[in-house]
Image 1 (cartoon, chains in turn yellow, purple):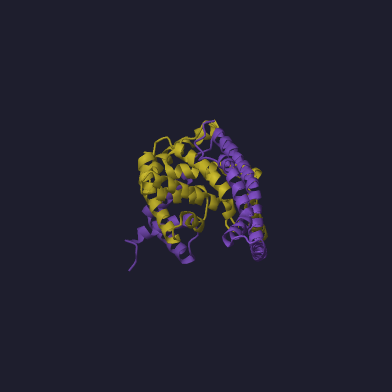
Image 2 (cartoon, each protein chain N blue to C red; image 1 turned 90 degrees about the horizontal axis):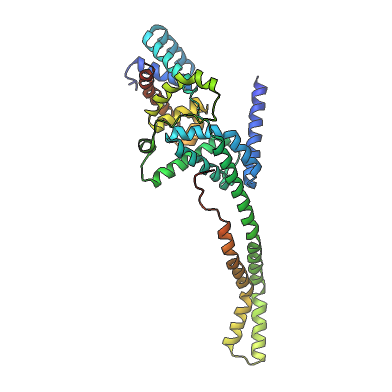
Length: 198
Length: 166
């Protein structure tokens, strides 16, 4: 068991180094593979963060362009997805600053829409959509009422399954703040979730 | 003084932390004991767990168009950057050559211009001007090449990528 875990860690490290090398060369094949691999996770994170699908798609494109431009900065020591999400987050913040809003919460108030979490037509199969629809709708309703900072931590932890340390790296917040946001997010989500289920 | 208003609040926070990551042994024991004796907290914890499970069911996928247009743009930009760096290479090489030339030849050039100037009775200002022109020739040539290439480099620089409409 331990050997398998160690092998998995070693494999991940080696893969990260390969990604770093490829990004330094601006290898288009590698970038293609990365876009393919992280497409849903990145877009999901951006949709959750901005609360607006159209804006999330714009930033999705910009994120990959930034990855290509700043690829030399990725050293392969950290996980690629952590680095990718951090870039996406910075772009969202840059965008919100340009629009003279002051925070992610303000962004949500300004651009949040009810259809942000709707899956596209080419998303999951109809069967999946039907079986998960009720739950999804209630969570969706509850999530839209949550502020961006809390929603972000919940999504990164429970949806993207990142560790709290990785979330702290992405958000640039201390670990204690991440824990606090997680707890407060769950506490704030609960009443909305219960209400949505009624 | 405890930061929790009461045991129920503590139980809820510990339960949240337990779902998010492992908690330390004594906290886990305390939580289990509290949940065993408190139906309200047990229900709350159960509901939080259901909420987390439901959170995982929210499905958002990237559309095929979005992914394809992103790949296309990134690929195009990669090629543009590659072309740009290829075009910049001669400028770097000529700059390096000019710097080396200027550093190595300064004393010899100065001496030869000085000697020639005195031998041919050329006014000091004139041979000194001649020295400067000769000394700066490689750098000026490099600058001229850079200026000549500049419009092409500007064209090669990608403009800000707009939203994909493909």
